Length: 613
Figure 1 (cartoon, rainbow, N blue to C red):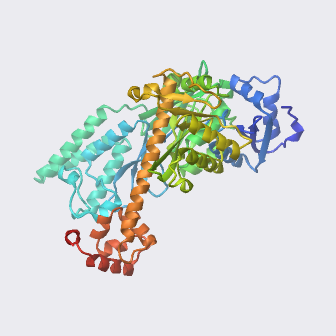
Figure 2 (cartoon, one colour):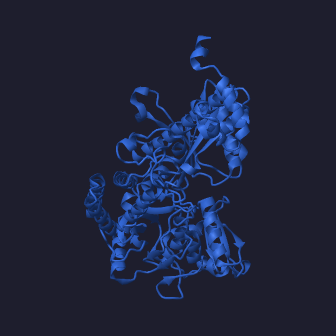
Figure 3 (tube, rainbow, N blue to C red):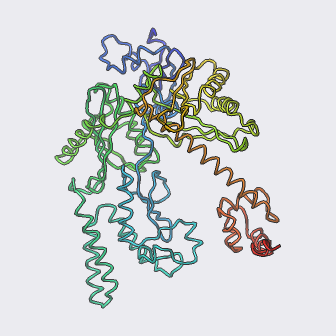
């Protein structure tokens, strides 16, 4: 396109670059839109290969004006998440790292694993990129500190101690008279342990053990002795990398042959807890500051734990104070953290050593990134306009023509995005058993959902299913081309998935994908995920209808009350076993309605009498 600087304002804002088909291929922000956009089209600009390819595809630029750089940063992040443009650095990680959550608002707090930070007064520890490491630590904490394990709902309704109590791993405050002060003291010990202050904890436990022994409380002394041994064994495997006890993330960028590698170290309480890598293909180090400024708000989202110090090998923009990043990005992360968050270069010998470790980790990032190779193979084999980064797959399920629904799964950069999975009920296809009609109806519903559009839409089925979807998409979305393919079982079921065939529109013969090849295995994995998802949602819907019907059959229970009871208790047996006080705890039911319902339930015949009748 011909760029005319005077057509763009010299003010803060966000720009959306579009290709010839009107698709958003890049989103960026700038303090001065005119100066930033001019830098793309300047002949002397030293762009990397990815930016040169981007500029070659730009056909139109839309701009959105804002008042401040901070507003531009937040708007840019929102648009990147919404449109997931091809040339942006997009955090395609399927899931957040695991954290420990200690619910301090509860009378008897418990320790759980979560991927989401909620500002509800709970205390969080982590993160753990490895789920197995997190669960091993959780098991260890459960062995040392007998906190309750059950959920709040089970805790309120339990009538006898569980197996964990019999194993000595829970004090059973649900039914036994456990001193709350003693329990909260143990909670404080768990916090010290997870914060890395185990040495001081061991000294305190040893003092209490000696005191218990002097007081002839030998069982209590033995319990404290076992706790000390378990903590000592854990300390032997922990590596202290800093002399202070601060939490910090260390993030380094390294130039690789075909992109930038990113290595992240998570240091908690002065100890190296975990690590993670990312890979940004097609970028050079000259583009690193812009890429980093786009990446950090996505990585440190509102529901992720943010430390008070983030050490960076490259600061995302020019800083007024040497070595310290401030401005809009620092303000956004501080607001999300609920406290100060410093973005800074390495300070001191310890942090420089950590930065060297993170840089070494970054240089290995590309070795584990197999999704890029598979995407390139699919681009060539399927004749796609580019490597498919977002792949959607649809499958239709029904039982004898009833309960027709379509399940859609989404994969990005080779990993599942389960938060984008969707199930579609298709009432217009009920009773027909016609998969083609059901897929056509689903295609119209998918278009109504809007972008982001997939780089490849995979259909579970053969040429007929593929033709039904492509025709429906062409009718509902005439101005946007969505690349489609289908995957079907081969003529002989004996060979299993070795004979799976992939079809493309306008092509009679299957695509030549070698059996057992990474590309075909990946498509099979996506197809199987769609099949499992739609089957599970169909079963859940069937169970829900069955339970709802059974509830409504009770005297005085209508659809609304049935919904309340089912959401709260989960099963008919639990509803029938609950007393009036327990029934009244169901949100929206009330004491009077609960008492009437209990009278109705008391008047029902028992299952045995009913059977005899």
